[in-house]
Image (cartoon, rainbow over all chains, first blue to last red; front, side, top):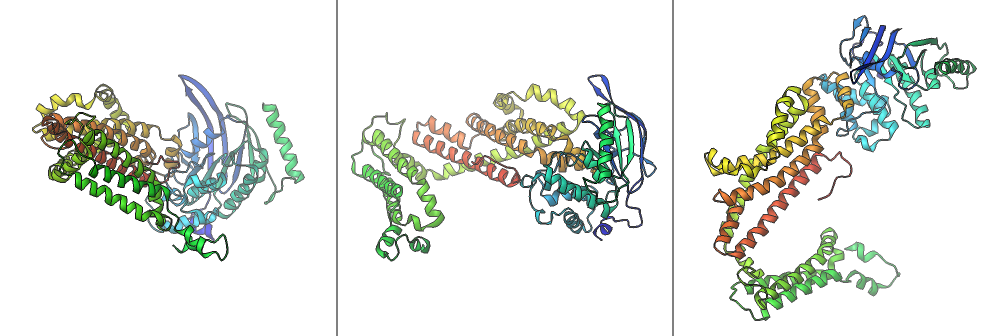
Length: 262
Length: 335
């Protein structure tokens, strides 16, 4: 119910379709080109949940930055709902590994950022309260970021994205810096938010288990420059259990691929 | 009051309880006695010169000493003011002892040469008799300082933000800033006094210059040091360029801006005094110069004390402002 009110244009499907075609990208390091992405092609159905899995520094995060529109791709096309990405847009939001909350704003002020930037005046307070309720931070609206634990800060960052009713949520190792217990809790949280809101989700991670617990498809990337090595569907029902034999089998399969990759 | 009386360690022992409540604060008591001693020393000992305000000075010291003595048994009952009084009592005591020493080596024993080192009652005399002129000087100094400071800080802040957020502005402003900025503002003094129509406008310009340079540089460094991820967040959320500058770059740079404002305030004091000594015919700097010219050394000390109070108050004011604006920061230095 909360999800329905958050996704403002009710007629629109909640999730966006993502199409990545032949995207290659290189960084310019002191005049020398360092290739990070090698002809990556991939599409995600509306409302799908895809995990990008690969070794650290392989270029996964770069791919998300390109999809978010923060940088243009060197080659290839990225389209969301068949519209070519040419810049950032609040309908596709990136949640970073660091919560990157603004320390000078309270939690409420941070969550309100997107609404302020888009000059959404109407029902702003109600939208913020909903988003905070969704991530379980209702009691912390007036706290400053330095008063929050790591998990709470990441929840606030999620609320800051969700309040804009994004149709594509890009998660760049959002749980990478959390302790093991908080991680498990936050994985369940993300799953619940996705099921309630039906946004399309792309999660970058290097935790095989996390990818298998959350995603409908796991894309395994190679070492830099990243190319797609495997595209593995995860035909398991939610909620998934880490000791499910099918999940354990998939995990071994993926680890084997990654082991060959390294 | 009730609190200190109901704290019972020995049940039923009423008399010890009362005595416990009335136990005098020794530092406050000592301070009171020290001020009474100062009063006695000023009043009783024969003086080498003629100081019309010795009696008033002694009266004041005696009055303060009496108040401290009377309050000393009740310090524990007085709550926050009492705690504050207890905290500052050692300072009160030392201050009285220092004044006694000063009194002795000047008016009483004349160990220090007379016109150059007046006794405290001579300085009190200046405050009591010359306050209209002294007060007017403070006012003139404050008007000149605040005009120049506010103007310089506003220009410096705007320029710093512009350099930090626009490549084109940076290209043109950076070399000028590097060449001209480090020059002490006082070096412009001779030029300023004939370029500007009045010595007042020249001094305002100089104060603004002394303020503007540190504010510009620190605002600029604050803006260019902003975490790039903050901009990425705002851009994905649909922020315009104006939003990025006003709502991201400036708030993130504010701690740096305040460092610049503090440096600028210190610099502006120096320029203010020099400008008033050399050109402006009013203000505390002028008063200092005037007092020295007439060998009115007591007036000079009085002006120095007032100037110290003024500068310290302004710095305190800026600290208060910073504490309000940057309340979200952890571990601020307490002034």
